[in-house]
Amino acid sequence: MPTYETMPFHLRTERLTLRPWAEADAAEFSALLSERGEGTPAVERIRTSITELLTATENTGIALLPIQRRDEGDFIGYCGLIIGRSTLDEPEIAYELFQRVHGRGYATEAAAAVLEAAAATGRKRLWSTVGTWNTPSLRVLEKLGFERDHVSTEDSGEVAWLTRALP
Image 1 (cartoon, helix red, strand yellow):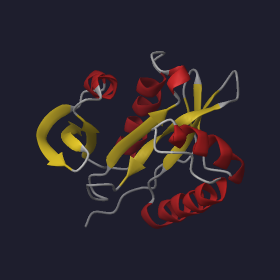
Image 2 (cartoon, rainbow, N blue to C red; image 1 turned 135 degrees about the vertical axis):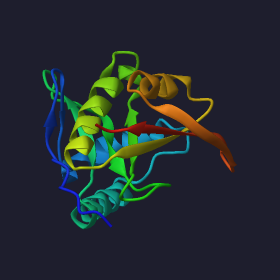
Image 3 (cartoon, one colour; image 1 turned 60 degrees about the vertical axis):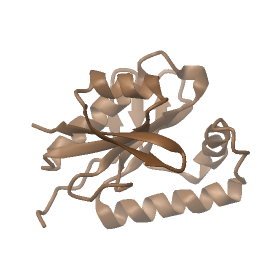
Image 4 (cartoon, helix red, strand yellow; image 1 turned 135 degrees about the horizontal axis):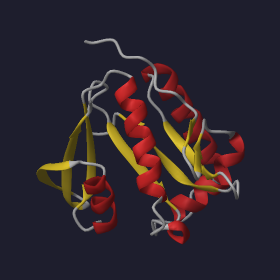
């Protein structure tokens, strides 16, 4: 298996900061997850999830990072790399933002920063999996140069598998 550099865990864009998780993110992370319509996860459960994310980052050298708007300083979601349905050699990019900030280009901006950081680690390709119903996320991935590889059917419905070669 190739050896990769560790992904930087603090990224800045013109409007956003992607940074390591903090315990203080638990309430906001819980609120974000509740927007999925599956209930509000207990903050204590989210603290455990944050600890698991930090442990995974230590073990893999890749990270899922909270997104803050630089001017406002507020938590608006997360973006980063995960193993997910893929591998450490070719991880998945993942992101989720509060609905109140959709349509402002934040997902594209954060994901572009993560793509650049992933390329710097020496990886050659990334994956993304997204429900075929999720047109906004598919559009973000298209803007970033991801191309559809195949579609699978899962319990949650059809899932598009997309890939992007890295420079």
